[in-house]
Length: 326
Image (cartoon, rainbow, N blue to C red):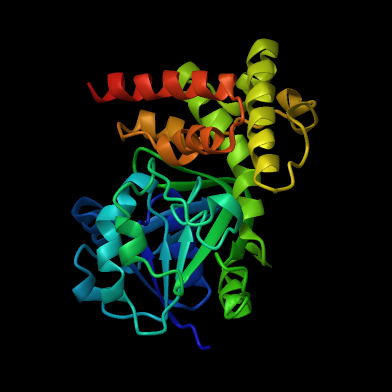
C-alpha cells in the first residue's frame, strides 16, 4: 500500500506537529481546518519548535474538503466534541480504500463494538447517544491511535514540542492488516510507533492519567509537577487512578501499575507539563469532558464499580465547564 498523500483533519497542537513532520519526511500533506486556521496557515504556515530546532510546514489548507480532494491516508486529530461535525466530511477526503487514523484522547464511541460479553455493542450515551458516529464512520476504515506526546500551541500559533513522541495504533477488531505500512509513515515523521492487536488496553492505560490530571489541572490551574508536588492532590490522583484501574479490571483489561506506583517520585521530576484541558481553558475553548471522564463514570455504572473520587471530579469539572462558558 503506497501512502503518499495525507490529510490532517484538525491541525492544532498534535495535528500541526504531525503535519510539519510528515511534510518534512517528503509526504504530500494537506490540512482540513476551520476558516480562521486556514487563513493563518496560508499566511504564515505552521511553525514548530522541536528539540531546539524551528521548522516551518506549509500544507495545502482548506475548510471545504472538496478543495483538497481524496488522499491515501486521513489522520483525524480533532477534540472529541468536534468529531460529529467533521465526520460526514471524511469521505470526501478519501478514496474507497483510504484508512482513517484517529489520534484522539479518551474513550472512543466504538469501545464496546466487538468487545464480547454482556457489554458487547453497548452504546455509550455520553459520546454517541444518537449513534451518529457509528453510522458515518465505518469500523472497516477506522484505526485508533493512542499518543503520548506533550506539545503546546502558543498564543501566536507556534507549536512547541515539550517531550515524548510515542504512538500506538490498532483496529477495533484487533486485526493488524495495513497497520505496518501506516506505522511506517509515522515512524518516517519521527514518531516511535507500535502496532497493537489490543488497542483498548492502550486506550485505557492512557485514560487513567487523562481522567485524573486534566480535570484537576483546570480546577487548580496547575501544571503536572505542581499537582504531584502537593501531597493531598497527589493522594486524590492516586485514588482516582485506582478507581479507573478497578473499572478496567472489571472489563477484563490489565490494570497496570497502581496510582501510588505510577506517581512515586513524579512530583520531583521537574517536568512542567500542561494538560490539554488546561491549554483549552487558557485559549477560551470548550472543555473535552465527556470522552475523558464522563464516559468513565458511565462505564463504572455499567460495570457496577464504585468510583466516588471520579464522580466528584466529574461533577466539579462539569460545573467548571459550565461556568467558563457562562
